[in-house]
Image (tube, rainbow, N blue to C red):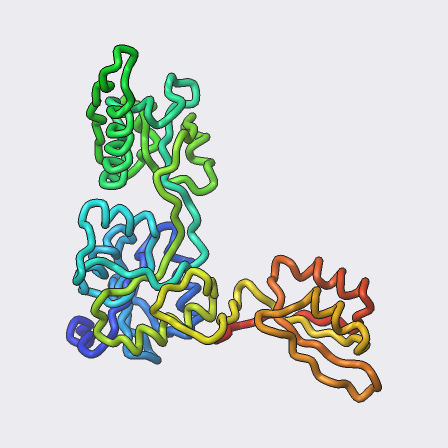
Length: 330
């Protein structure tokens, strides 16, 4: 099939083609019922049940394609968006808009130095050699430090001499730069910290906090379909407090990955106590049972808190406590 000639009329959705965000992004699409089959030789896949084409791109390039309006939606890291904007500031017509915090891919872009070296704060590296894959953010970070330091008078009452930090671009293996004598410090992503520790490095500052986000073009080809896709994804990962104005709702949408449903029976006299333990997303569903003065309560509970909630319900007199997972929600 000539995929290029089958893209007309389809929403273009950029997905990381490899790296730490890819599998979680694909799982998110699966949970959102976005069905496709990708030929391993191609970076484009047509969605079977929606007029969408997935475009597999390096995560670092996705803000560019979305920001220029070449694709409509994208999943990438907030670090990549910040780097793109540091180099190419957004305008009224260009630049990506954040739709949803996707609640995975947590990491930090940090200033790192050898553990046994003479550097203890980021300002100690002013005038030194810094290696990074994030040149835009690193230059911005150290420019701010240099400006701050130059405004501090020295012992003679004169402004401190401003030094020009030397930023060197490396496309990969940044953590090896100090050991090989290429750099005095680096700016690189840290997830668990294992790679940093293995390289004999320590973090002395954070440039930006990051996680995966869903972004959209300022002028999408099909705004209604963008809304639909965003709502589906929101139903799967649901972090509604971090949604922007793209999706407005009268109530917060349930988060399938964060919540479970809890159903239990309780005497009507204990309802006030029980509902304090399980207030729900909006309010509990309370149904009268065929037994006098007994009710059934159905409610959503955060998955990470369910064990404690069940303990508290049992202690207050609730019975027949059941928990069920949520495949999706809207």
